[in-house]
Image (cartoon, rainbow, N blue to C red; front, top):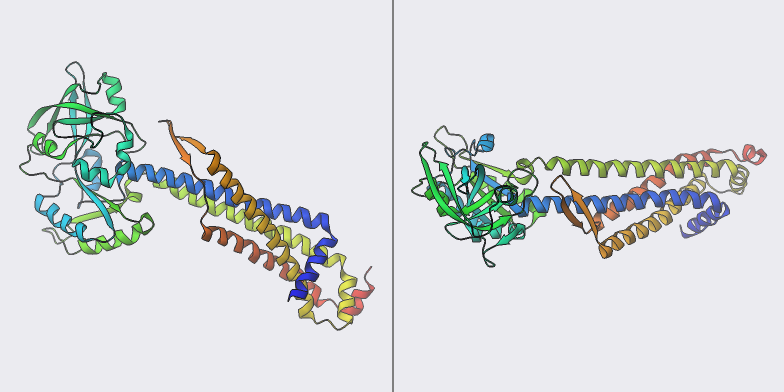
Length: 416
């Protein structure tokens, strides 16, 4: 085997220019795949991280039917105190759950005594919310407390609304809301923070304490709109979601249907389509890599067979078996793919390391959000790309190799 590889390498060096150009094409394809996959993967991770860790969470549980009308933030489809207690008991025992936070979501009217506008609000327990969406605190451009989000009697307002209404930290505002029975109630709050806006639903919501939300909505006990859940390992999100669904399945409503519904972040935000598009683009560039390698190696091997017909005939006349001749050409294709992919992998990984050292900022969306990318490629992804190049190189060599092995010695020796 080693002897065949040495002969294959010598034959490639006989046609240095052609081998070099083909190798460069394969290496360039490998570099393109590694850099693109590294950058797109980093961008995808940054977008998903911002969405899930800033306001959405990894998983949400609602009363059955809530999500269908979530745009209206219905108060008549909330989890009862008893239902929340049951769910909290399950979540506390779930090994894959890191933290969870109850929320009361509703619409209200906000007034600074001179202007009035609509605002979407989340009633939260500050400590639980910080543990469930840890990046929420990083969105506070201004804040009254360093060690907590807010306390009772305080509100966090979205930045765009605070700017538009001229509200500043420490100002007093009034919130007026309708409860599920239609009665109206109002309360005064102190502005304890300004929250930077983010893309997507929920990215421009305000926050008050859960007990304040219950009081404002005239609830005897908090009726929870949703439970936001953070899992310990994002890579095991689907497994954790499936386990939770199994735990929720026994709970039925009066009609005998599931009492709760569980959704992962992917079904809760339209930005999952961006993730799907990135995955499709990754697959597309891998297909292009396969085409480049296939065409390049096939062309080189076909030309090699054509130019060495007499040499092949001489080998056959000396008693070299067709299998050995076939193996020689396959080894040439394999060697070309191996050296080129190794060089491309080294260059591609090197470029990603440079990006990590220098830093790469990408602005996304109309909000002007800037992501600092840290591109990298998983070893498995790198091995997969490397394996594709080798496999396609071998496959592309099979047809020319088979043609060479079928040549008749007498006819081949006459070839000029």
